[in-house]
Amino acid sequence: MSRFDSYEEYDGYEEEFTRNDRQARRKRKPQARHVPKRANSEIIEAIADTAGLEAGFHTTYRPGLFEQGWLLESLRGFYDQAYITDVLALVKGGKEANVYRCEVHERLDFPLLAAKIYRPRMFRQLRNDKMYREGRAILKEDGHAAKETDHRLMRAVAKKTEFGVSVQHTSWLMHEYTTLQKLYSLGAAVPQPIASGENGILMGYCGDEGLAAPPLSEVKLQRHEVEPLFREVMRNIELMLQNGMIHGDLSAYNILYWDGKITLIDFPQVTDSRSNSNARAILERDITRVCQYFRSQGMKPNPNDILRSFWRRYVERNAEDVKADLSRMLEGNEE
Ligand SMILES: Nc1ncnc2c1ncn2[C@@H]1O[C@H](COP(=O)(O)OP(=O)(O)O)[C@@H](O)[C@H]1O
Ligand SMILES: [Mg+2]
Image (tube, rainbow, N blue to C red; front, side, top):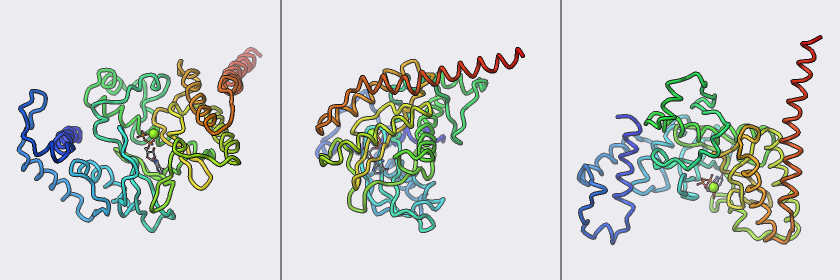
């Protein structure tokens, strides 16, 4: 059985087990839409089998029945490779990913780590990411770009075959991971990337044992913090632009606040500022949303002015640099 078959199975479990108790007790009307292929007892047995595979990996956090299979399967690599020793809590369950607080193996010097695990649903319903994908490579599991000349792969992606969809999934995840690597090494305010797996990434955790860092959207800043933190967000946007990147989903929801400091998160849709034809609109939306939050905190930044200035300085300027370089090279050839 391929791993995608097995995820399809988990989706069955999800439908089976996420209904609340009252619903679950109610006798199900026959539905044309979803006919369970196996009796409940068989499904539960299969889950128990999956859990059996994880022998030794006992988590303090008790995952829901449906969550258990894919959670343990997704995290097992991090456990086997001695990155984490336990899953302590679910930090947040989103539509596309769950983030868990993890206990760290003693060989690593971190109090805690965050594991972001993509939900199996992703295999069937990729976020409408076409706009972001334009102008960026398909990344493979090793983080390297697939070659345009890899016709088998490119055709599978274009035709959205099962293999093609899994390639896109990996690419989505690896864009998030390699962006974290790059930004972290450049000194951006992002979680430190620790490891990537088939279905998730492991990174530095913001918060403590009891509480994960809230997003800015839930924080009322003290007056003296507002401007320095705004500048810090702008520094990060500029750093990204200097390296040809736009976050693509930046807002007070994807900026965490802890101990007076901010951390930018959630990068799978990172956009190429130079080769994506929507880049300017995407950047405009990022800047506008950030400004919206800082307006609510008493500042009056003008998103249009910032956009114009950043675009001119980091995107157009770069394009000019390339042209200038090319002219210089051509001149060299003529001599
Ligand atoms: N490194 C981290 N440390 C602590 N909490 C985190 C971390 N990364 C993500 N989270 C929490 O998990 C939530 C979802 O993560 P995010 O990367 O934004 O995925 P999604 O695509 O589901 O929005 C965040 O809003 C935040 O509350
Ligand atoms: Mg998010």
